[in-house]
Image (tube, rainbow, N blue to C red):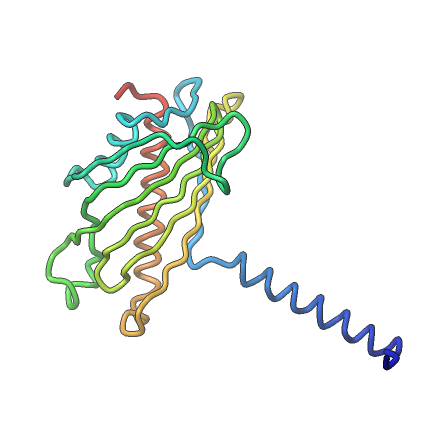
Length: 200
């Protein structure tokens, strides 16, 4: 067996560490990310009932439509479940607002989409994964979100990320698209926070 000198071992170790660092950077960098800390008007806990999540979904569409609603509890979601959490999944059809800059590509101000959502929560922590599909040009993308209720300071803290592959001809509008989605994510966070202190 050929001997590997100390200098070669050091070089190999540096190369491995560099590969790990590059992989980690690529894995944790997202197209869109946003955080929010939203004040609450009550002592709150998460409610992931069908009625509550349907109302939030409806409000998120700006009261357009939510059709083919299908909600069911899930015994577990392996990569989302945590201590004392319950999980559910739901899917539905709705519309999403189209940015004004897209009028050259899409004549309508809204376009239809299918939403598939998985959510796990206990009294103060929530994790969601929302996948939008059948979107014109983009096809599909996913939003991952976490939230924690802090009743001591009466606030809900949110963090969300999304990766959105875009076709080449939309790249000049990339920042407009990302800004539009980020604004929508923040709006959704506020709707979820409002649901904590509102009787639906």
